[in-house]
Image: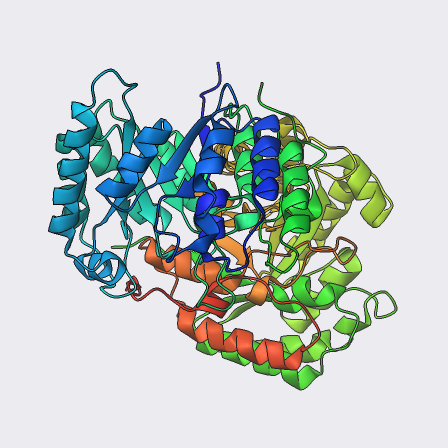
Length: 308
Length: 308
């Protein structure tokens, strides 16, 4: 029996958040539906941030409502604070991601408070979540940004990562997501960090969020697989990344990730050829945005067979 | 003590062979010198093919002569047959690569004869090499093309690869180079094949030649490292690949490979920042050729430290 791996599409959130041009809601819905049809069963569909900061997510409620109609889909959303999480819980989002940076400087730069205050906010969030009576329990993904390095601090100590992970776990995180926010990770570091986190996480699943900024995204996936990671974030066409770095690619491309995992014999439930068609749909909807990834241009190998 | 890994630059051969526009010899020499200055100690500098087929290599003798002046460099060259190998031996090239395809159809398409005849030619070559008296012994790299799949046959059986490897070894190959000629490899297949080849090769070194056609190049490097491979081919800016596949990237990029290996703690002796400058030199010399790779665009991480 092949191992199952979950591919979580994050393009609708991480891809779109840096795209200024508003993508019409019907295109977002078309994208969501098509990825579902290609076999994707987890999707981060929006971020609950104030519209004045990111107008792209002004239709977050509609996206969530649509995603909840797809019977086997687990939609998730990013929330920067308790207010956003409360909104997501009210909408019935089953999984919500809250991010704390392992780099204090990055946390300051990003949300204008130290890491410790973000951890305090996470504890408040978990406590509010735990106190909700008569509702489906919302799962909280404890995301750790700058796990593998930081553009301000450079190296980030494994001890700093472990501190954040342990606090997230003790507060009640249902999943630990380690993010290579700035694309500094290499397979040896990924192996080191995930094997430490695995000891702390026990039965709580770990997930990986790799950017492909320096071309090591899929290599890092191989290292994380070896540490037992079975949930990977990615975005179609590698959308995302940093708008201020010319030439910088974004997330690992969902279609390339699905191809590699299936070729390796993992069961993702996802059809890479179907994803190539989703990519074409997104390309038509976002004609001015650079697309990354490889199999979208060159197709699958003639030797390719779906794992199941 | 960190493990040593050899990065063999093949851009002057694999990169240039598909570029129609003749690169002036002085630029090839400048490229060669600059990579040497960045720490590269093995370089495939040309192919000994008739000039009427690939005019780009009309200055092969000059390139070899220059490369031999770099005291710590081991230059190598590709030769399609005994005639080419004899020419290389006469010029004093210390390592010559001869390629046999694990796919019979590909061998036919490429050199118009079956795999068995190419193996016969390899035995003849090795025998001529062994018979040369009073000369430095030329090393023969036995290259296996289509190791991980073939655009004509699709999957290539591990048994076919092993047959070619065993014949090359018994004829006297000094290194076994497994090539993902068409970019079909994935880390699981790479691990399977290299671990089988390792058993047959014993003390004879193995090397890997990965194309990044489907984005898995560096992921395949991670898998090969786990099997004990310590020699990797790559080309600056990822030059190479297939001129007939729009969007298809070529070899893994030397600068990205060096960055990843050094970040992982392997000692390559190569300075990735120096390679970024070589890439700029090559870009100026070949302004119309697409350049690939990542760190050439985004630079090294702030967290980067050279392994030694």
